[in-house]
Image (cartoon, rainbow, N blue to C red):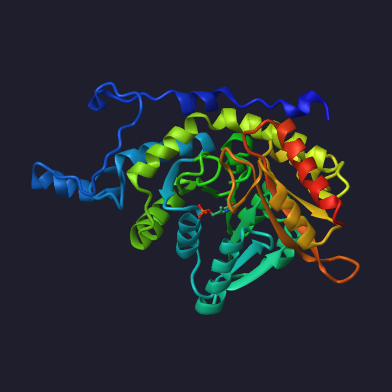
Amino acid sequence: MDNKELEVKVAPHYFNTVAHDQLDQTHRGAVSMPIYQTSIFAFNTYDDFQMAMQDEQNNHIYSRGNNPTVRFLEDKLAKLEGGERAKCFASGMAAISSALHVLVSSGDHIICVDQAYGPARMFMEQLRDRFQIELTFVSGVHVSEFEEAIQPNTKLIYLESPSSVFFQLQDLPEIAKLAKQHGIVTIIDNSWASSCFQQPLSMGIDLVVHSLSKYVSGHSDCLGGVLIGSMKLMDNIMNNGYQLLGGLMTPHVASLMLRGLRTLPLRMQYHHKTGLQMAKYMETQSYVSKVNHPGLPTHPQHELAKKLFSGYGSLFTFESPYSLETMRRWASELKYFRIAVSWGGYESLVTVHPVPGKTLANGEPLAGVRLFIGMEDPEALKQDMEQAWNKIAITL
Ligand SMILES: *Cc1c(COP(=O)(O)O)cnc(C)c1O
């Protein structure tokens, strides 16, 4: 892999948006957005109150609707994603479930990529089982799968590119074109690449969701989610999914997210580079049979990856010819990699899981390992892998 592939450029406007705020004098020269720790906002006259009530999303009445600190983050996230309006939620799942709650009704049909984030998938299965919503899973690798799955009642296409587990990609511009022809709304989980490296709205996708708990927070200390899209779609989501389900982001969390955002492009450049280096390294290891990372030339959709992404996230998986138990022992021996769920913080992480639909020759489930490459030095991480394997290998 040449150095050119490791160095990525983030668009200058991106840096400017995270670094440069123009807070007006109502904030007394504060250079970072104050935390408006208040649930309600009071009015001087009843006329003012009634005027504000006519447009709750753009006035401050109650913090379940619109809070200045949260709104400041929302406007920044919308700008970074190239969307008209963003709404922040208590978690990625609050954003996903609110969007689904608003966008589909009984009798509608959803097409979803089969390796979508587990809880998102589970929520859709519950909609199917409890509210008579039809659901079709597709691998998403070929646009024709979507074409074949479309029914007259198809309302929504749910994407996640790359998908969890195998890191398969979807051809976003082609799927968006197809969906538009049929009047179907498209939504994508863009958490992995972040708005730094993939801009789905510019490719024709209608709505973007992020788990802000990952790269945007960046410090494994808070949870949040965001939905971004056109004013029309977002109005409906704000007035219904947000206001009525009530999964709001608090001003304190918004402030932590704003702090995380300041360094997002810098961190993403580092994650891109070290993630690729580590993925490449894993391909050379005896206990690895396959690495799933879209930035590797061995990834079956690498050419599409180069079209969709301007850089890569540092979460990837590999498959091993050794048993689940062996790989779990290996994970336990790692010093830098912590055993934990989630990802996107400063610390490298590892989990070991059975690979869906794949078995070893003896019928045992195939071991899959998910690695998140944090902010450590990649050489130290490689040494960590090596010492852990050496400890395990002598017992095999
Ligand atoms: C973590 C995650 C989510 C859910 O986000 P929470 O903030 O944990 O609710 C959704 N999608 C992906 C890809 C994730 O990794």
